[in-house]
Length: 123
Image 1 (cartoon, helix red, strand yellow):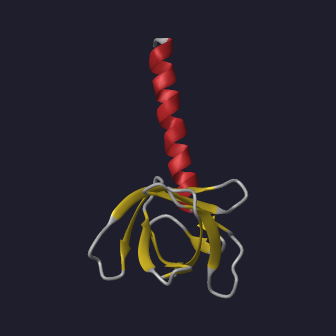
Image 2 (tube, rainbow, N blue to C red):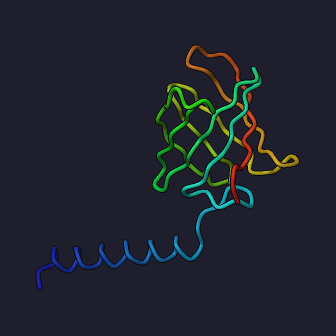
Image 3 (cartoon, rainbow, N blue to C red):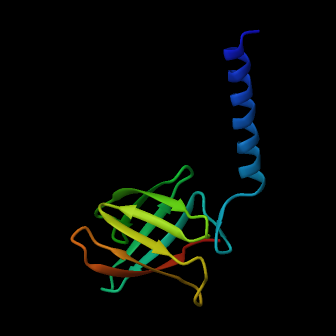
């Protein structure tokens, strides 16, 4: 067997092991499983949006009236906090709950400070 074939088999095995680890211990944000989760994001301006965090780091956001939708990315940081990037907005939410919500802050595309709350819609 060639070394490239052996490496290919090793890579497939490692990938399978990682999928099993994730299935057994799904990543969590605070106490909530994060993959394929729904959240309500509330802005300091009173705006409310539904956010779906898909497995693999992609997300979509839409106002609760569902007239629009935006795509973005999410990442669970090493410290347990959640980072979202949506249309130039970069937001980081604290893993620690304050009541039923996670408080976050960030920056708009034009550099303005923004604050949001994130509330689980299920689970």
